[in-house]
Image 1 (cartoon, rainbow, N blue to C red):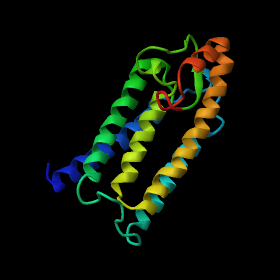
Image 2 (image 1 turned 45 degrees about the horizontal axis):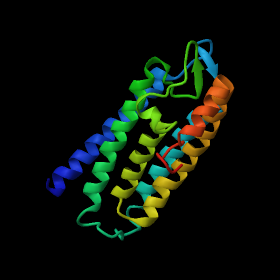
Image 3 (image 1 turned 180 degrees about the vertical axis):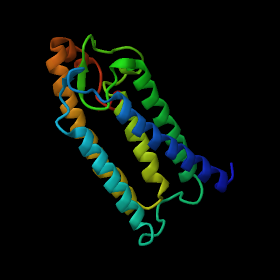
Image 4 (image 1 turned 45 degrees about the vertical axis):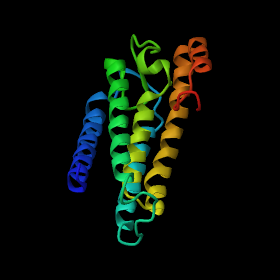
Length: 192
């Protein structure tokens, strides 16, 4: 794949991801009366941090030269591969939860604790997919300073959201969630 085709494919997938995230926010957010909401503002916080981080990273483009190893050979194809993996994992997690997936932290009536599929490997595969997408977008800049701005603040926002979500899951599922937590990692299989 030539550099131009690679860049076009990466940008196309990035735009598809942005549209998907907007649609997810519009159509899966649990409203009052449709479930118990535990979000504590994390949905808005995550969007604000993502937008600010990427706007600042974009602004930095003219000030920081490309300085990462492999910048002109393997880094962009690797970022594309990570992006595709992240999109697939995020989509798989959302499809597995189906009508119980919510863009905000909420429990819907009849919801059960999901343990099958990718949820047997990590407790928050949707966030794992999101983190991989963020990593791919950050690596695609090929600049250490821009990677830090594009990846660190959104990751901190995701980790805070996971904390809020885990408290909600403990309230909703009690000992069953504690047992599940003891058997699976939060975000990275076998690690964290």
